[in-house]
Image (cartoon, rainbow, N blue to C red; front, side, top):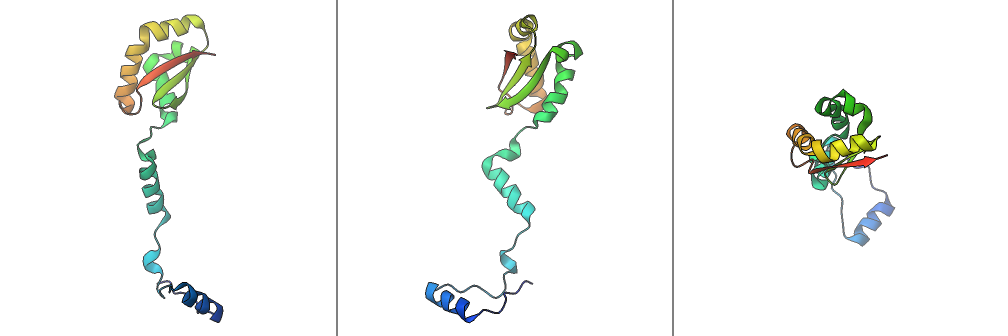
Length: 123
């Protein structure tokens, strides 16, 4: 049980002026930081956020090593997976022919709520 220190005359005068008295036992007001962080993350919606590092690791498995050497996911922004592609020919194949299949596989792995679309960018 955490006790409040003995109040000085100054503290007593300020408490009387404010009209607020603090209780002697402050232990019922303390909470573990993990509980506070969990509540804050849930309030911001970050507890449902998908792990971007796991997406990068899964990318090679989903598309194969040949394409993974030429195209790497950079980030997820507003539920859109942004992929940097090195060559225009690979960009064409990914954007025009393989986008649907890759999107389905990534959604199966990480959930439809976390990935809505894939954007391929040459760079």
